[in-house]
Amino acid sequence: MNVCNLTDSEEVIIQRNGEPILTKYTEDQGSRSSYYGLCYAKTGAKVESTHHKRAQASSSKERFQQIAILENVNRLLRKASDTVINLATIEDPIEQTNLAFTFKDCLEELWDNINLREDNWGDLLNILQGVLAQVEFELLSGSQKSSIKKVVTEYLCKAEVADSDMEDALGILSQAGFDPLRGISGKPQD
Image (cartoon, rainbow, N blue to C red; front, side):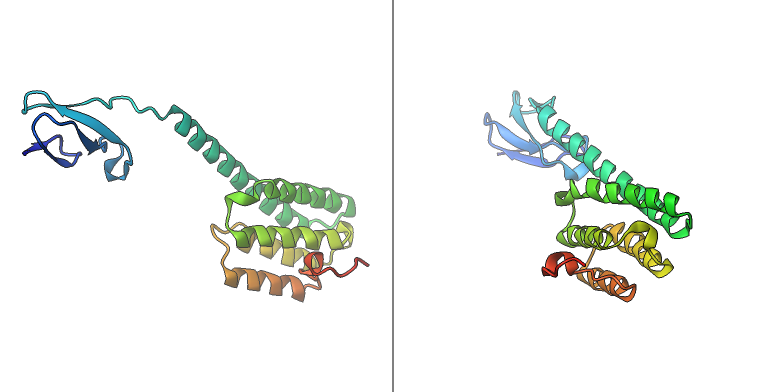
């Protein structure tokens, strides 16, 4: 058996003379790489990798598409947050209605990407949509606007929505006079 040191960034390989070996390909990505190169020892002194180009064009494309979708979700969350902040400060009923519809559209677009986040995030998004379906936007009270704003900015926009966050958000909406579970409880609409 021979021990071959490939480079400083690659692992030490133990190889029997003349047999192909696999080595973790870590030159580009440090120790995080999950790709391996097939190496041969031609003379016993020099090891050459046959894995110079990664055959991962399709997986890279999928990864970039996933990143683009996540960036779009983050953009929609920022837009929803900005819209609900403006909604809480606007008094003009027409402008408030326009902002509320913009906010509702953001929530619907976020709903299209519900599988990208954890279950609690999707549940909170669903509850917010149900709450907004209960009222006419121009009739929202100041405390209701503030509660929706707080739930969106402090909970929906978080990196991860925990169980305790869900309980807090439900409490905030209930204190503002909403029935957050009305949409899933089967209670008839007024």
